[in-house]
Amino acid sequence: MASRIKRRWRPRSLLQQVLTAFLLVMLPIGVLIHLAGQSFSQLSELADVSAREAVDETRRARQLTNLSTDMERSARQYAVLDDQSLLEIYGERRARYSDLLNEHATFMGNTPLIQSLRQQLAVLETLPAPGEESLSAQLSEFSRFTSSTEALAEATRRQVDARIDEIRDQAGRVTTRLWQATLALVSFSLMLILFFTWRIIRPIRQLEQRILGIGGSGDSEDARPIQGPLELVNLEERLEWLSARLKELEEQKQQFLRHMSHELKTPLASIREGSGLLADGVAGEMSQRQREIVMLIDDSGQELQTLIEQLLDYNLLQQNRRLNVTRFDVASVIHEVLSKHRLALQQKGMVVEERRAPLYWQADRARTARILDNLISNAIAYGADEGRLYISASADQHHLTLDVANSGQAINERDRDHLFEPFYQGSSLRKGPLKGSGIGLSVAAESARAQHGTLSLVEDTINDCEVCFELVLPWIVEEPSQDTPSLPRAARKKPALART
Image (tube, rainbow, N blue to C red; front, side, top):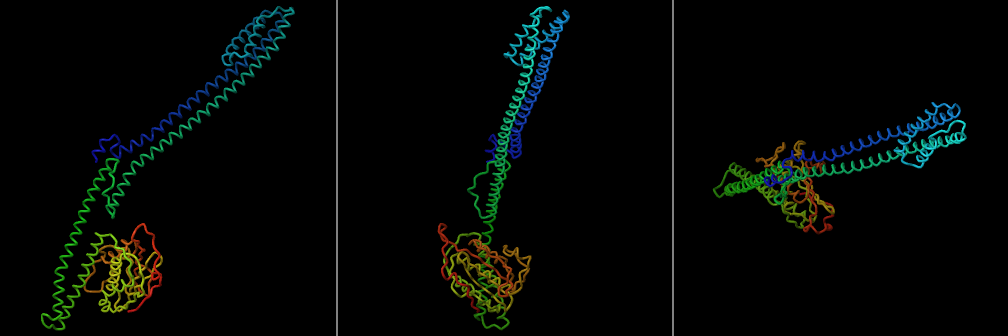
């Protein structure tokens, strides 16, 4: 798998993928910075050129206005003084006006006003000699010439304003394009970020699901192979190896438990059979002291057999998680389980309060009985001598609640969080010659979880009992497509207790 990934064009390692993602995400941002720089440079250059042109054209229009006034003044002085030097000054000013007008025409264009000024300037090219009647007529043309020049200055100002408005509009268009490019490139960068984030997060989540499948009951055999960075692909191979190794160890553990349980039960059966024959007097009459020793051996063998059966139950729960759902009477199950422990309860001197009224429920009867059996065994082992054992059952439309409480020493606070862990031994002292295995409550809790229920130690005391366990089981339908049926009339009755 790893060799197949290596042959592909995409980045092989996680570092390469992160660096590639960084470069690709930064690329649109770099393009955006370049476009912004070009736009600002273009606007700056356009504004600079336009400002210079506006200043030049305004200054030229002012000069033309001044020159028209100076030309009129020189012409009138010449008509009064008849001085040739004034005529030369007039000619210089007229020539200067003609040059400036030609320069101004490149900015304004060959407008009718420019053409009119050129015609008027041609008429004013030469001045008649003083005393001639045509001189006064020509001098009267200067008022129209000055007015036309002022009109040219006004047109120049309007042209400059129009150019400024055009620059402002162009700046707005550039800004709009820049914002559009920003939106597009930032969106593209965001898409790249989301894509590469998905590319990195997806195999990590697949690995997480694979780990959860290895650690829990999930089956990861049909999981899709991880496609991603080479480090994560290699990690998947390590997880597959670890999963296979864990399964191998689990099989070895189950095999060990089966063999050990069988090997223990075989000699134990012989011991119990021999102690039973001795107690029955087959080998001859025994003294009272000998009979007490034989009974001690038999009782210890019985407790050892109970521990082995709990170990077998734990092993069976780990292997088989399927439910055998049936409809049964909860009160009957309680009575059957109590019958198994009747002698132990009598020896303990415990007073039992149990439910006698029928209460029908639908769940796994064997697992429910196993839970009750472990809870009652726990109450006998740790409960007070000549104490009380309280078992009640009640139900609503969807849940069955079983309470098993006993009098005696309360469970230590530091033991409560680990109470349902396999093989955990609490600080409370077990009453009896044999120490417990620490898996009774674990088997009970596992049986409750297998039926989608809960088993918990409740804080509130019931009937002055210091230790109380509460089992909550749902109504389990046989077919997943069926709706949860209504409970029978008997299931809705209040719990009825009988003292034995």
